[in-house]
Image (cartoon, rainbow, N blue to C red):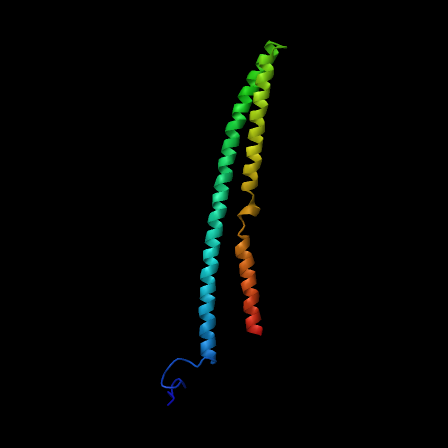
Length: 141
């Protein structure tokens, strides 16, 4: 016998094909989808922040190497000017140039790790667009 207030048999759950069941399923799936999207966003932003801190560390390393290179190159220039033809000055110039090259390499690597394009949550954005497309197809189809 049907319950007159709900129209459902014996006050049980809504029929599988009813609008109430479909709305309930849609609400439940939307909630689950939102939770998953938020979890993906958090994971991706956590990874991006790690990359940012790595880039900052590389920039600090680059600064240290640049200061060392400046000191060595200055020392090499002084030695070279003092002893115009001595090989000690040439050796100091080579060492200074190597430190400078290391510093430039670390600075470039750190800059690329800190670019805004690497911090954008691209996977989350792509997943949200795909989910919106699937939902619109379900609603229209």
